[in-house]
Image (cartoon, rainbow, N blue to C red):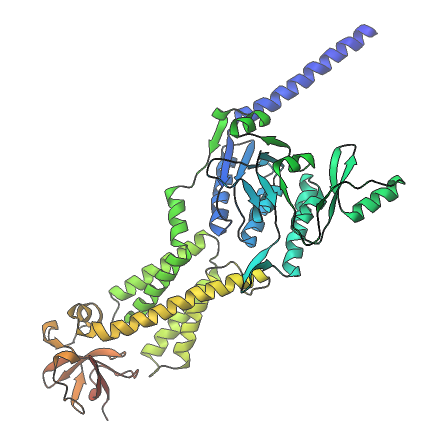
Length: 493
């Protein structure tokens, strides 16, 4: 009987060893992916992480290490990343906070939220994590978001802590500055509890629990060092670099693949930046104006098409572009064309078209339509400011072009050239090149005036413009004033 029991014990140990070996070999067989997060949390990072996780899945990676070194960023992007990491059921996810040379060695704000979404947290000595409350920029500096936003982030942190086995009270204290935490000796070591949790423990145990050091006070957000994170049961280990991390995770450096952003990633980030997008919008608006005020379809129309295509393509790549934005933009362009070509003058239709175009550009920079939370209102105001500055810049540039370009032969070739103009470009003169005593002189429009075009005055072909009135080709025009280099006309009776 003893011999049978002994043989059974040997068999069990061998089976256990085999299972452990299979587990270790499983990690070694597939590549372990490290995905660095070393910048602000934003929509572009979400796109990069999505693509990186797909690569890891295709390679059948058993483990993904998210190397976090960030002060935080946008709340919406952080929440999207937590959902993205939470959907990884085919691999173990590890949040690693390094203290590399030149790095910050922190995972604060949105970085803490992302860390708690991973199965395991490992930190280098000297790093820290916490201060995850949502804030926004006000006239008084950075202030805490309203309760509605804080409640949403607080609920997500609590859910992540419960899902991945982290102390719920610590997760909440990193978001909510109203919580107090005290050290309490437990069978598992020193842990942190709120006064309410301590009272519940006393009720269940029937004995008084001695409170230790207060680690989190009211009106203070919780931030913990690497040592404290391990001591209070949040992080799994404190290491001293990647080699130490590899030893702890039982992986080899040869099995690790570090993903970095490609040139195409950086290019998308560049064209989707606020400065470049604003510049493209400004140039696009100017080119669109030149196109709708000239006959046919030429270089200005091509430039406008390229600019707005790049803007919307960049928004699509980072997940902000939808069918609504495109429909609004196309509707705005159609209304402008109707105003220019069908309805005389410029009124409600044209203004409505401009508003729709600007609204589509604002919405293309965000992934929501109507702002609900404070951070969404903050983002909406920023986007509105960028688009408004682009509009102001476009109007200023259009004003300069209206003064300078009419005397440019290049302008007449690119914008005003059309079939049946009559005369050659060499015969075209600007208002500054002809005698100023032309008030009341009558001529014939050689092109549609929308509002700029060409007119024939007794054999002299001049570049003229109206006060906004649309005048058809072949109509009689009368000079009513000369403003600087501009010769202004109206339709004859």
